[in-house]
Image (cartoon, rainbow, N blue to C red):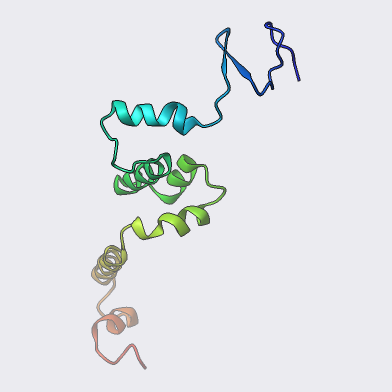
Amino acid sequence: MTASTSGTTSRSPRATPLKGALLPRDHNWRQRVWRYAIKDAGLEGEGLTPHKLRHTAASSAIAAGADVKVVQQMLGHKDATETLNTYGHLWPDRLDEVAEALEMARETALKEAPVQSHVYQMCTEPGLAAS
């Protein structure tokens, strides 16, 4: 413990130095700060908590297109698994997008392949791919 200029220690349960003044120690940030911020914003009775605000920030980031690594860093998660386990359902299902990209790649390959090639025949003639 270190002594402050007022003679009390910095770990004193009775006082905390704040810009040179000693104020009663209040460990409850929600009572000391949050409830006044909610009142000033006109959000009393809405059930808003710091935890809900954190989820809202994550959800908004995902909706804006943030990838899992960005949200992981934003929230301070140890790894992306924690982020995906909590928010994975919010990322859009991109299977249609992937299927469309694969189809476009297939069409491009067929346009560039010689008509006589085995690949062209496999992709265009029914039943040939199974043989």
